[in-house]
Amino acid sequence: MPDMQTSDLTPRQYWAEVKSNPRRARFGFGEKAALINIDLQRAYTDVERFATAYRTHPNQIPYINRLAELARSRNMPVIWTYVAYMDNADDAGVWGTRTNTEDSLQNIKENSERAELDPRLDIDRHRDAVVNKRMASVFHDSLIPSLLIWHKVDTVILTGGSTSGCVRASAVASLSHGYRTIVPEECVADKHEIPHFSNLCDIMLKYGDVEPFAAVEAWLASHPGCPPIREGRGLSF
Image (cartoon, rainbow, N blue to C red; front, side, top):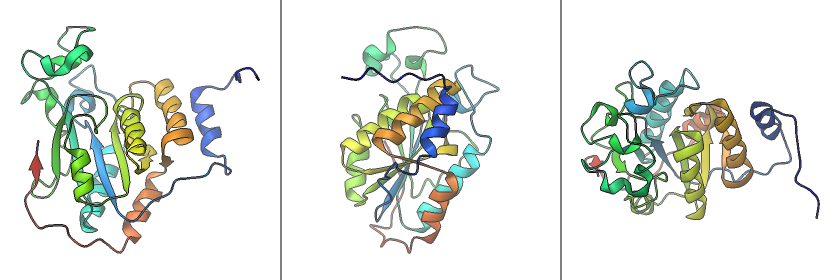
């Protein structure tokens, strides 16, 4: 058995190598996508206010708003998730036991500043689903799997953060549920470039397609549109 490969490349350099490999087959887009925007809440986006926040690409929020606009115009579902817990954090389980500071995960409470979705986001409260998730994957103990079945999608587009945490966990779960999984590179972010680029590599090599924002925008813009499932109000869970 050959030894594990070694390399002197940085994660950023390794990602550039993986991304440029023309032999790497893609899963590709299907017929209908759901756009799932993960935890774009102030705890993770408001870098002026919270120590837990981060920024990777300066146009992340405008790009996500553009994808949401296009998805709605094609009758594709748009879903926003956020993390928030009970006052006693029982619903955080063991995930909330490592630290206990004001910045700790389990101390993000419903209706708190840290739980608020970023005000720069264009959320259509009449059409979009806003889902409180409690674990890393958007699929875990949430209504998102049911929403995807209801909307008859075959492709999941993931944005948000963090790349190495909830985005990666959701990409693994998305593939495991049988969905083509697309991650627009400029639309995901992390606290540090090492986990960010390392996990882009893992997602690209194993679980989904990491595409430039422009490619995802172009696919949505050129899509003929899907029949509406139902005209109605947005949902919050």
